[in-house]
Length: 188
Image (cartoon, rainbow, N blue to C red; front, side, top):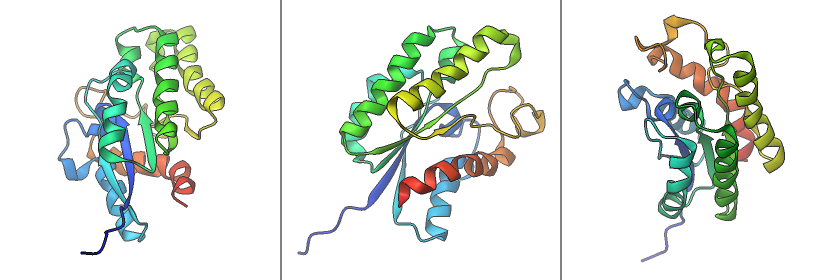
């Protein structure tokens, strides 16, 4: 029996925003990414190891198992929002994100970091410091950054579920379009 070449995998490693919270699995941005890859004949499969409610610490604890299971060529890291919502220390979040990136690269994967922003009610100092974690980690780890996953619609409630936190089905193509320009070069 001839050996079968292993396909290339994109591992999406995030929280509820990538797990498709409140949506049919086929309607989340990760499923739309898989459809786009097929449509454009880009030879990658997509593994979604996102967990609703996960923090960067949770991601750090599960990254090794996800890498061993999926053997990804590319890892999209989308974590941090729950750290802020729970008031966890930003220095810890920064360390966790850096560790996830380092372990992913050690496993042979390219990495894309996806950032988040907090609403202004968190206070100007905190929201600026939170955003800076993503830019600092991307710069220090030399990985591309999508600065804000919800760019262009994050303040428009018509793109959110009733909880005002989770994007609805209409927002999912917009998330993919925000992510794609930084992801596409990693697939070459």
